[in-house]
Each structure stands twice: as C-alpha cells, then as structure tokens.
Image 1 (cartoon, rainbow over the protein chains, first blue to last red):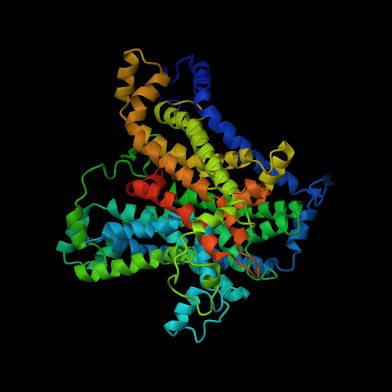
Image 2 (cartoon, rainbow over the protein chains, first blue to last red):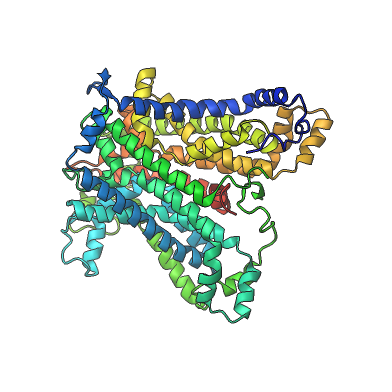
Length: 314
Length: 304
C-alpha cells in the first residue's frame, strides 16, 4: 500500500513538501475517479447501509416506517419454521452446483484444448448458454419437462429412461430442486470452461514436453504438472461461481416457484418471497444482511487465498 | 494483450509465444485419442449445448395447439413464422415496450459505465496518488457483489428517492454493478501501453485528457470493446433487480416480461420462445465477436 512513495512524477520520498503534494495529487485524481466513486457510493455502499438500517425498523406492508424494531426482524427471520430447511438447501445448492460445474469444466476445457477440425465451432456452441439469459434457458427446460406435452419428457420416454412421459419433474420440491441444480450447472459451464481454457493456454508447452520426454504418461502430466498450474484459474472460477450460484434467483424461482411451501428455497429465493409475496421488506432486509455477511466472508476468504491485489503496485 | 501489471506473478511468465502445436500433442488425458474420435465427441458436446436453444427455435415456430399437443412433436408440422409477428401484440405483456425498455436500459447503462469507468481506469493505471490502492480494492469488492444481495436496500432507497419503477433506477443499478469489471479490464489494457508514449505526447504539448483520447484510446480499443460488450450483455439479461424494482409491465425488460407468458394452467410457449430467440441472437453475435477475449477479460487482475 505504499503507492505514494513509488510515484513517478512525485518528489523524492521524505521531502518536506510531501504531505501537501500528496493532497494535491488526490485533488488531481478526483475528476478521474470521482464519478466511479460516486456511482459505487450511491448504488452499492448506500443501499448496503440502508438495508442494514431497514433491518432494524418496523416497516409496514405499504412501506411506511413505523419506528425502531431493534433486533425483532432478525428474531422473526430466525423463527421462520422453514429456515433450517432453507439453510440446508442453500448449502446443498451451492456445493453441488459449484462442485459439478468445476469438475465438468475441467474435463470440457481439457477437451476443447485439443486440436481437431471444427473445434472453433464447438467452442462457439459452448458459449451459447452464457449469451442466453438464464431466465430463457430455464424456461425452455421447464417447458421441456412438463408432463405429457414436454419434449424432454417425451425424449426420455422414447429412449426408455422414463416409463411414461407424464412424470412431473417440476411438480414436487425434490425433483424440481435436482433439475434446478442441473440447469444451474449447465449455465455455469461456459464461463468456467473458458476461464480454465485461458489458464491452460498460459501453461508453457516446453514444461509439458519435458515431462513427456522423461516418460510421464498423459495422466501423470495432467495431475502433476497441468493441474497445479491451473490453480489460480480454478480459484477465480470457483469463487465467481460460488457468488453467482449463492445469489442466483431465476432458476429456482422458475423451476420451483409454483410449488407451495419453502422446501425448495434458498436464502436468496426466500428474500424475494418475503419482499414480493409477504411484502415484509423489514424481514427481507434482515435476511439480506445475513446473506450479505456470508458473501463478505466468502470474499474475504477469496482475498486471502488468491491475493488478487498482489502485483497491482509493481 | 499483456495483463502483466495485474498478474499474480508478473515475473513468472513474460509474454512469449506459446508452443501450441507441441502442447496439443502432449496435453492431458485423452491426448492419445484419435482425431475422428475427437470430432465425434465435439459434435456431441455442441449438440448438448445447443439442444435447449434448438427446442426454443422449433417451439417458436409451432402453433399454440401444436406446442401443447400430447404427444409432442419434435419439429413443427406447420412452420408458423407468423408467431414472430403476432407475439408483439398479445394481452400477456406489452412486448414492444418491453423491448424498448431492454434496449434503453442496456444502452444507457453501457454508456454510463464507459463515461465513468474509462477515466478511472486510465488514471489508476498511469498515476500514483494517495488512496489509489483503496480505490482499486473498493472496485474489486463491488465486482463480487450482485444486485440480488442488495435488492432490499436498493428497493427502499429508490422508494425514498422517488425513482422506484423507473428506467433511471435500473440504468443506475446495471451501471454500478458492472462498473468494477469495466474498470479492471480497461485498467489492465492501459497499464500495458508504455508510459513513454504518454510522455512523448506531453512533451509535444498534449494535456492529460488529450493524451487519453488521442494517444491511448486507439491502442486500448480491444479492451474497451470487451468492457462494452460485457456490460451490455449483463444489463440485457438482468433479472433479479428488475423484478423487484420495475413493477409496471411496460417498464419491465424482456427477461421479466417473458415470465408473464408462463401461467399456471395456460402458457403461450411459442411466444416465450419467439421472444427468447429475438433476445438471444444479438447477444450471441456480440459474444462471437469477442470470443478470443472472453476470459482474458473476465479474469484480468487475478490470473495469468
């Protein structure tokens, strides 16, 4: 964090006019970074603070602030009978989606790194779920899994996986939750695969070649040389997936939203139910704060492991 | 595109031509696989990833009766291209207005991001000043946040400002939550332009802004294009915040409007899919343009 001492146009460190100079440097910087600071403050920091504040207020269904509620909203949230199930769902959701995504992406990126005719086309096909809105991808799968008239159901019946196409995947919480996990993995694969592909391409060919000359098998080369070098790319892919999946709303909302109860909810979908169905913005704020604290903890962990700021000041 | 300034190990691997040919021959598991085997696997992978969008495309061309028929047809018996005309005037949602909303919000958010992020990226890459690291750290933290985490706070705040249910609110949200990525990617591009070029321009009498616009911009253009496309696509597909903040049907973007076609008992699937195709095609074209940079951009600042 010693940014001021290494500056190019600034005077030598320790010179008497340094403090005034550095204040002037800050003033010079303001027109350049000011707009960014303003936008972040207004739309990210301020709502975060306002959310914490709202979580301690008693807010009516029409949005009127009826005074302080102390920690009552938090107590109300923790008293929701479905909360243990929702927390367990959240953990299963994040772990299952991220783990499956990472493992499949490792295989897929390894494959897309090989040379074969038409590779470019396959790579472009893999991008499509990334370009399409998650809402749209989820909707088409939801349609395909409708009993009887859904095309995916029909296909599963035609190839003999389903006895009859009248199975209702999205009609009960458990199977809908599983289907939602599959869709979440599907839409997470393109970004993760491309991140790992970029990581693979930064591994120098001569290292791999040397290991091969020493008699290492393809498998040994992969696990002993390629995989360790992929660690930074894996770390980035994992953390971004964890945050995306944790905050993901549309997939579960569309797949499981019409199922009564909270058996297929995560904390994020519960927040939206509290806002939209119950109009309990105060409780939603309290749950959001809990969610927010979890996200911040994950980011802190990421900062420790990946150290993304290292090297910025070279 | 050297991101050396932002890499974890700037000294580890200087930019040097990769020995691609040899690496392909000696890579990981499956390197011994035959070329025809890879092509077959490639076709299967491509089909798997395109399948949902194939269902979408064929579904968008079926009649309402056919798309709900039991048993379903894989391909349309009659190709109803007119779905793409009639979907614009349906009772479920004012689709033309939804399209306008989507375009206005995405374009305005992208322009705002560019205006705000470009100077910040340039200045932090070129000059040292007190608080520079704190600023970059703040940007990195916002990159990790999403509107869904803050939606309760955003909703209350916009209510207090009187701009809930307006385009302006969503333009600000989309701009703020995509700002971080734009700053990081452009920062890494600016940092790769040699300082000597700036100094030469300043000796010739150019001010800082002139140096930015006349000298640097042409050199970092690829980074700017990447930032523009990413911001635009993210705003185009945004769902969670729009759902809570935009309550008037006409204000809602396509991503939210789509869900109106899906009812408990009666769904106009052919329109859902028609709208989806219309919304997806431009984004695929944009992504294809920057395919090579897709990830270098996303991971700038974290990996090499």
